[in-house]
Length: 266
Image (cartoon, rainbow, N blue to C red):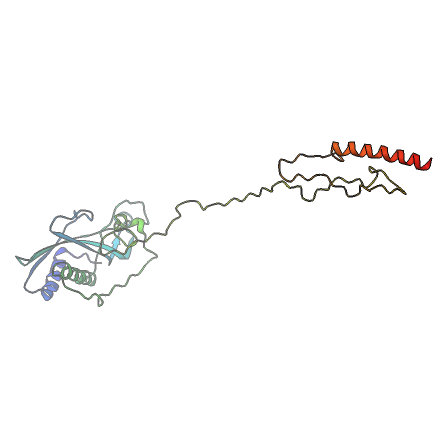
């Protein structure tokens, strides 16, 4: 591709600007010292991030095309003098085929220059003259020749100007995936059953431990229940048949029964 001089840029810009504002005087200069993060008072900054251009590596001579070329513009307008000045700086890209750490300058075709300056004039009309402009006729076809845009090799991406990074007015807004602010809450449930004596068997005299009173009219102790102590403070009688007081009464009653039997059989 033939490298176009700055004189060619000026001629095209002067022609297009005369068609848009024939009574005003505008000039275009190249300024590689422009800083995206620093704009002088009285100047307005704008940029184009999808210009088309080609690059050639000065190390390995690898050549590639890109529709993600970024061009920075600083614009000054003096309404009293009806004069304006535009300073421009194309941003470069590094070669991804070799280890050369140099941003190569883009090269543009005549059609590329015409499209870039056409959009620049719309920016001038909008920012300096306060006009409502129609950009629908601009051909903005973004292609990914040779694969997706390699942001780590792009000077504009490293400066945070390209889409997906925080930038200025003409840049798409960056929206991050909300992240979790902490660990999820954990609910721990612990069952603590309260002590209960429900279902415990009451002391009974049924069986070998209770005396048998065949042919006797004496009362039976079958189903006799010990006192119930519901609650955690109730004393435990594990291993005991009956309370001590009940045992004494039973002993006295047994002696009386024995005496009655001896008398009856005697």
